[in-house]
Image (cartoon, rainbow, N blue to C red; front, side, top):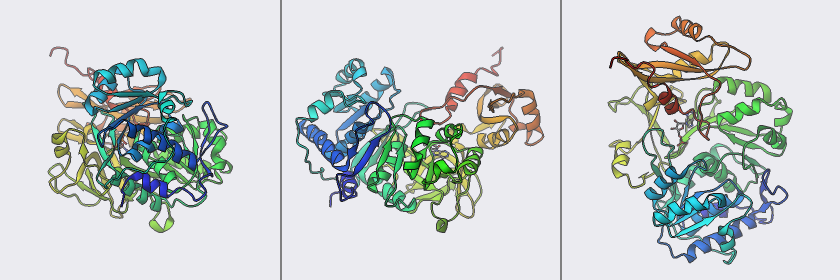
Amino acid sequence: MNANLYSALRAAFPANLDSLAIQPADGPDTHSHYTWRDLDRASARIANLLGSLDLPPESRVAVQVEKSVEALVLYLAVLRAGHVFLPLNTAYQASEIAYFVGNAEPAVVVCSPKNFIWVSRIAFQAGTAHVYTLGDDRSGTLLERAAYHGDAHTPAMKRAGDLAAILYTSGTTGRSKGAMLSHGNLLSNAQTLKAYWGWQPGDVLIHALPIFHVHGLFVASHGALLNGSPMLWFSKFDPKAVLARLPEATVFMGVPTLYVRMLGEAGLNHAACKNMRLFISGSAPLLLDTYTEWQQRTGHTILERYGMSETVMLTSNPCHASDGERRGGTVGFALPGVGVRVHDDQGQPLPAGEIGNIQVRGTNVFSGYWRMPEKTKEEFTADGWFKTGDVGKIDAAGYVTIVGRSKDLIITGGYNVYPAEIEGYVNDMPGVAESAVIGVPHPDFGEAVVAVLVPRVGATLDSAAVAAALKSQIANFKVPKQVFVVGELPRNAMGKVQKNLLRDQHQSLFKNPVA
Ligand code: AMP
């Protein structure tokens, strides 16, 4: 049997291929729409174009383009052709693209028409033979060339373990690494989520996430495609525009910042969400405040899940009451077929409720980092579990809670401080909207705890008063030595707070002037 992921997605298309598959909700052309037949034919043409290039099997196709339906079709075409899809964040600049192209050695690069001059120079210098362009308005050479090819194509034969995609991690420490995901990793996870989240006939997904990342490309797109469900397709997130289309949808997936921004809209209420079945959040921690406010304003309980580029989805709060209740502040249970355990730094298992290193295994877990066998070896335990780098706990009922990344752990005067614990206390204070707690070099303590706070709209915060209030609640070594109040926290496109930037910014704070 062919384990090509495209074959499984194609088999899930509805019987009526002329029904709606994707409706663009913004961008240059909201009047047109895409049927399932359109997706099938358009991806066949591009797959045939790739086939005509006589590339070796598993050639990398690196893609840095604006979000569009055609960009998703390109992904499907790469799967079909049996090559390896390598999406790149649209924010990446020349030096970053040079690194990815040098590291992955793609046979084909597809970029935005406006970036062709500098991207093609980098690609040709690195030995890439084919560079195409694709704009968000169907412009560019990719579709022009594909138009010469036929609209029927038989998916390349694949085994479950064959490579389907390489996702470069965001690389907040050191160079970013290419996580190698197979057709089997992606399909098994998509099938698990289809069942666990109860995808059903009549579902309509609002797709408002970027498609260079695991969340938008795999979790959201595969979810809808594998259920034969139409998508309302936003090329960018705009809270007002999304709100206006909620009555036509049943499922929404977002990173926490999207929920926060929608809460800022007066029109978000029970009536606006009355047709919705499921709101899903992930990629970064969802504040309890957001979770509760969303419940009050809409009557819906956000389902929070946890995953990463290397593993696709790992845990999820339940969708159906029969699987349990959704618990705010937790990322739910290990998904069916996924193993999640917590070990200490010596590799010993920890009892329920104790904080340690989260390790995982399952058919969803990647095979390793592209051309980094040593790094790959380091990140797996001797018994084959992947070390996620996340720190957390599993309670007696099986709910998993993430408290942070292990590299964010602060060691001050020999004591461990978990930033999430301090952030929890700070966020509970009146006038605080959110916070980030980091460790910065300190001549006496090794590292010192520093808190960066964002006030609620209209509130003013006094740094000294915050520190004083914390002193009465937590051990002295955990109290931030310095508290900063800022307008907003630096975040990446997926809404993750970029603590590395905060650490860089404050790294000389306690520098010994004599040293
Ligand atoms: P990425 O590979 O970019 O998807 O990043 C994966 C990382 O995002 C994980 O290792 C976690 O640190 C974080 N993450 C993803 N989902 C959640 C969540 N629901 N809560 C907290 N952190 C999350």
